Amino acid sequence: MAAASVWAVTGSVSSTVSAPAVLTYGQGSYVLQSPVAGQVTAVLAKEGERLPAGSPVLEVGTERGDEVVRTLDAGRVTTLAADVGQIISTGADVAAVEKVTRAGAPLYATVYVPAESAAGIPAHASVDLTVQSVPSQEYGVLHGEVKSVDRSAQSPRQIAAFLGDGQLGEQFTAEGRPVAVTVELKKSSGTKSGYAWSSAEGPPFELTSMTLATGSIRLADRRPVDWLLP
Image (cartoon, rainbow, N blue to C red):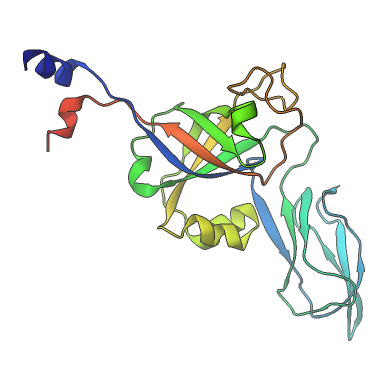
C-alpha cells in the first residue's frame, strides 16, 4: 500500500486520444460558386490543376451572353462539380479549390478532436497518423507533432468551408462539434513521401492532400492521484 501511495503521487500515466483527420496544405480550401444562372457552355479548368487567382474555371451561357466563373484565390482545383450542358442556378457549387500556390508545399494534418479532450493536448504533443490509403501493417504510421489547437469547437459549416467538402463537415460533427488540431508532419529525406514513418522507408509513393486518416495524439501525462482529487 505504501508503494502504491508513492506511485500515485510521483508516478505518471500517459494516454492518447484518437480522432478522424485529413491531410491538407494547411490553408484549407474554398467552394467556388457560380455568380450567375444559366447553362454551362465550357469547362476551362481540370481537376488537379493549379491556378492563380482570377483564372477562368467555367463559362456559363446567360440571357446577357457568356459569363466566366473565375477562381477567387490561387490554388489547386480538387473537384469540378459542373459539366458542359448542365443548367446551374446562382450560388450553385461548381468547384472546390485548395489554397496551395506552389509545388512542394508541405502537407499538414487537421485532426478533429472531441472538444472535451482538447484541453489535455500539450504543445508539441506527438501524433501518430494512420493514413487510409497506406497499409499500416506494411508501412507503419505517419509521425507528426501538434502545431496548434483551436480554441473554439467547429460547426459543420466551418469544417466544410475549410475542407471544401460538405460531407466531411457532417461526418466530423456526427458525435458533436470537435476542435481542430493542426499537426505538422515530420519530414524525412529518406522516404519517397518525404515524411517520417514508423517503418524505415514508408510507402513507395507520395502523399496527396484531402487524404483521410486517423490521428492518435498523446495527451499530457497525469499523476494517478489526480484522478482521485476533485
